Length: 127
Length: 267
Image 1 (spheres, chains in turn cyan, green):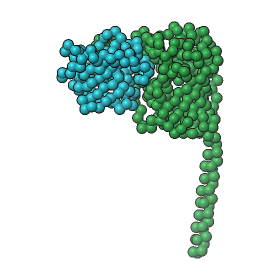
Image 2: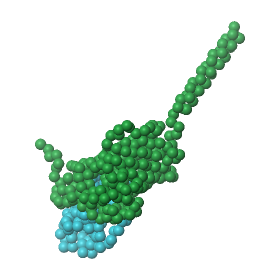
Image 3: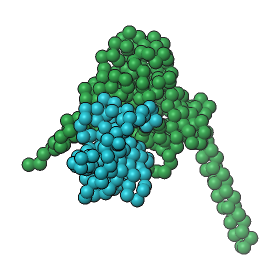
Image 4: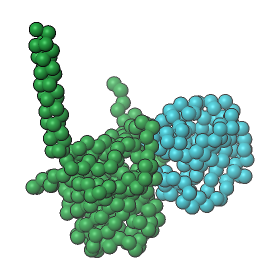
């Protein structure tokens, strides 16, 4: 499945997050991710792991040069996400989504999930 | 003859009625021997917000240790906190954290078990109040209307006894293993920690735990913290268990950015 390009240059938004997002203590914090930045990409889901300690979303997204980049996005713990309406089948490989996350501090291909919009327009938030 | 039969019938009925009344009276006597009060109903499934620190002025743990202003640290406690590497707060270091619950998958202990933004269930009986956490499937019991053991064991969740004072369950706990942190930011304690909780259902949807921590080696005077929970009585209690194998897999993917290595490879 092809990921739709969404100019990565325009996607890199420096938006302070302050303290509005619910935190889960240990993983996915400022020592791993740049919490001052949000990245939004159109992407294809490659995997969805409903697992401990935190749920993982694998995806492919094209950069502004058309090159596909693989990302692994860290979401929250399964029970915390369940309280937001998620379950282990909430995403399927091959789904097209628009996803927003905090990118890695070190420039790697990992991120911290913030929200996504499915093809049918349904918005799903971090738990 | 018929008159005699009727007379015997009514005599038997009278004896039976007296017996039933005696039985009921006996039950009433039994009731009188039950604990004076079971207190208000705390049972149900409860969900907290998830905080990082028990400091009332800094629940998200954004201040450096010792600067909250509402926790009376001893020098020992400050030194201890500064020597640790929590995975949250201004000095967080997830990769090299010394948080025992993360590094070794140690039990959270109490009250940290209640700090996750996950559910717990309260089951209430005349003699015990139980807290059942979905995180790590752990549990704690509060024995009602009895004193502490002569020599309480040292344990992850401590030994707790409670009694009702009006609409408030007052819980006295001792015997905490000193390797646990009170909260994710790393507030320390010793085995001498004496914790008092005052648990009250302030309205049908809200349960409040007010804590007083008394631990002279760690804190120069008792200090207070609070946790608030909302009712989530939909019957759902999930399972989430923190394991070293899951954690190593997570770190391989998110810290090392490499495919997860099977922890238990097949033959």
